[in-house]
Image 1 (cartoon, rainbow, N blue to C red):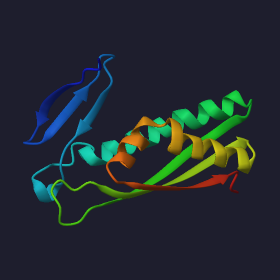
Image 2 (image 1 turned 135 degrees about the vertical axis):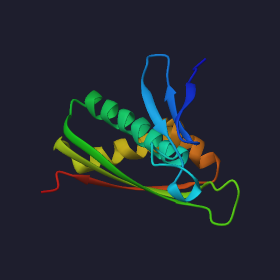
Image 3 (image 1 turned 120 degrees about the vertical axis):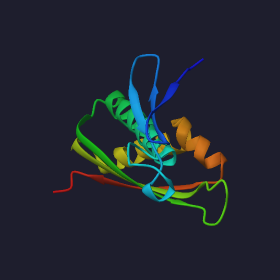
Image 4 (image 1 turned 180 degrees about the horizontal axis):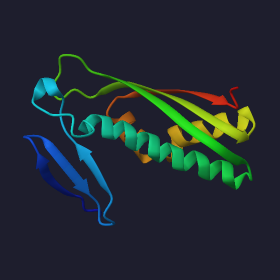
Length: 141
């Protein structure tokens, strides 16, 4: 079982979440809803989790193919449902950008395998109705 300790640290909504290994993330709400920009919005942290989960998958897949990933970044764009409570992620688009000794086709395959088969966060989002799309860029100059 995984356990996260969550404690309010500042203002009304500024929390810190700590895992069993002592890793910390900060959470808050927006200024408009009473927060003070202490940390990630909870729904943003879900997108960050998606990026971390898929990034680990993708690097693992490419390493098994003996390919070298020198740089790896993502931009994750999400759109939430409007006028609903709770407001779920309606759509998410990820731009994966990789540099190294990597063929475009293999990078695309690794990203597809992660998002459609291996990434638990992607599957969690998909089961809630989120449409996930992505684009893969390799060795852009």
